[in-house]
Length: 623
Image (cartoon, rainbow, N blue to C red; front, top):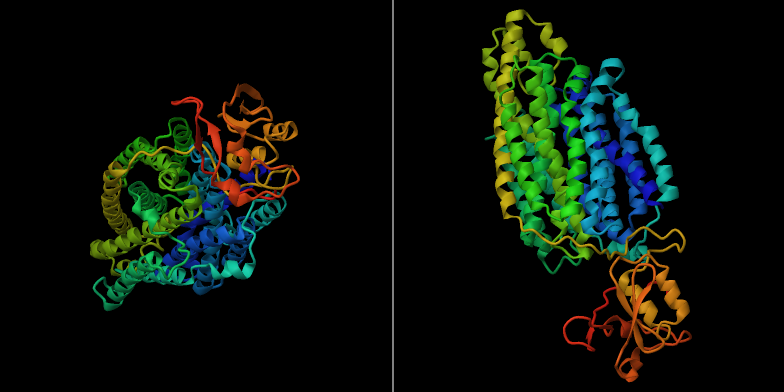
């Protein structure tokens, strides 16, 4: 598959999943009202992120066994199925089921795209590519509220979900014909045995338990209720058991290897990723509430008013990716980004009914810059201290942490919003209206139409309660933003790799397999009898890095090659017998074990005319 086709198709699916994760922010009150969801409205959103987070580590592990291609196509198919069910929902349980299925597919789409990009490019070069991919994600995430508002204003909310069907169907066709990547060739029975079933079960049940507590707390039950306490305790115990099992000898192939968290930089980057995505969805779901409940905007206008969050988030994400590629440094970007986010959220606490357009536009732009800077740079920090073989699972872990952060970014402010509104609802003079907005119903009544229908005095009281409730929501967000800012100083700057070694890369279009690595080219040149001219020509025709490599020529000399031609030939003053054990004729079968470790390259620095061993970490494929 060409990189252009790969990028465009992945971008479409990234945008589709991103839009679906936020499109309900403006449409949600209308959906909740029509389906009489009451306090269950929060599950229309949380169910998507719950299943997305739960299944992402599983996708990451199985992708290493079964390959990226069919899991990517399957993820899109599941996403489309969930969209159809959600669009046709006639009650709350049905739409929650549809959104749960959507979340499985959306989680798979996101983690597969991140893994495929990591397979295509060295770590240092991923910044630019990630900038393009995540710019699409930022557009989709930020435009979600606008698209949702337009749809519910001019059509049925069901088209929020139905639009995914033709887009997803087209994407599946493109992926089937163009996405061709390498994978481990092994009997499927063996692959199935390698899946971490116990770890997945422990993780999923723990996440569900914690989310139940966050969703029920302050609305369905008081925070001191035994049900909330039991859920939190079980969730915490489950997390402890999960990480203990992953580190134990009974877990043959952990889906979330403990050593990923032992690296200080990887751990800090994962925490920053969690906070970043939590605050991203905090903003996405509650800035529109301000416009609809306080500024009394329609859902469409609220979507338009939210556009400043898109204006600089996208170019900032692209610029951050470019700077990462150019400088190879992520820590300064993270420090600046978290500081800007802290400033922006602090300014959000000033929002009220009298805020001018200049204020809410500039405040949104400041926050968007900070969020955009982190969008394309945290994954590189997670991967930097790790070996290339850990990149797949590390990417899946990062995707899980981000999705888990999204859950908290919706559940925590929702719990604060409902609890604080109930606390302040006594300021509403009309008992009927106060009762109507009690019990977690305040969010489902975030509608300018409803508020404008109230008597002028009651209308001012309701807007005042919404305003003060949102202020507390932003004050709490500041605490998390401050934590993110402080913890970035504990990151360690690591060198970003400029070479790529992976067994899951894009297949070469001409040869139908992955392009040879440097190690394979070296062994290939050696193995046919001191690099015959025909084999040397074949090696020189391959896509080599810009650095030079050394081959033994037929004349007992060293040949230095660059990307396209031989540039230097020097005599090698050594005895031919030193290499006798490793010289192979074209007719002889290669002894791969013999070729893996003992390899010599001419040493150009230090002691002249000496040889030193190079360990070859890649075995030959198909020779």
